[in-house]
Image (cartoon, rainbow, N blue to C red; front, top):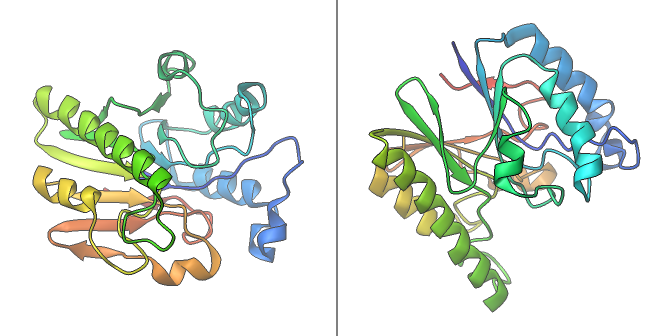
Length: 228
């Protein structure tokens, strides 16, 4: 049983949001993901999807894209991205599919790891950080802590975290998220959100004992990457 990751699927089976407007590499990107996914992932594996799953603005459209993910092999664990407006009650979401889990103030597992996470937000050191941003940032810090605490209270001592937004600002400064990851001894952090030119600002590799892994679909060439 292996663990894989990918982020920012940006699905839209209705065809109303063609992704190739963001670059030729996004043309038919869902077909690329499906082909690569099916070539390496089995029903025994788990896949971490760190947000921006569907462009849909409501659950009616989102359900179609979730069904597409459901048809792929493996167990899929997901967090919310900034474009996942379809995301509704976490209880309802977690009752939809046996092979799909949604994280918000809760956690799932992979072997002896607790899989935790939250959407995250712009960090205080980011450009144009506002009072409104600070409110959401603090709420997301609390959700991350709740998720980690749930896993810790269940007896888990090893953690892998998903967060949609980069937990380190474009100025390469630490944040409340990075401090928390170090406090809990998180081993790996999977994130996304960055595309195009912003990929040059991505932090990857080990920092203060934590491994940061960027899994944006275009960054990994629409091919889920093996984490463990």
